[in-house]
Length: 295
Image (cartoon, rainbow, N blue to C red):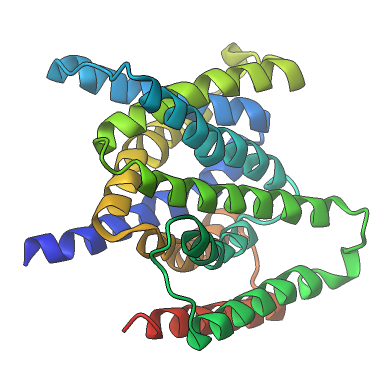
């Protein structure tokens, strides 16, 4: 019984801590550039896991296969999405960021079919995908319609988040291919590779922030972001993929908007408009159809 509920419990855990990260990043962006947020959270996450390894007396794998996959998943699952999503959040509300992440299950379904051949494409799933994309179009086209044009940063911010969630989807599917490697090992390997790449990218594209000027609130939020939504969550991420597969894990993106909307409204005084509500209705209808086809 406990084993059956473990994946659901872990999924809810991810919803809470990942959903909280959107508003957290929004606040940190007032003091830290996005690429340095990306590097900081990954470096802190890998440090926490490395300390855990040392305390447990575990050795990090040294095989070529391990580090090749760690590099690939580290870039697609962390360096790229953490960079572009944090950058995009400068120009769109955190609640909309979370909602745009809702396209992840749709992409995961398609990628799973082509890359790991464990998902059958049915009419319900196809209709669910159509509903999901329609919801996404509503969100992009109707939300703050008066300010959107092809050159607006608002539109570019949405594209950046979509690029990030697409990268997440591919990384999640690829993580299933190396499920024979323990989840904790994959987590620390991916984060170490991601932090190295992240440091290089941050140094090249953004000036080094003055850490002495950061107030206590920002430092505590960075620690939270690195330890929970990055370090611990990465282990849980791999564990869910092992237990239930990438499609089940991707459902976290359909649950996070509810949590992120609540936090965005209460902490950042963000508003909900008709476009967001309409987009949610279509996206959640798409979820129901996709899940229905699995029964």
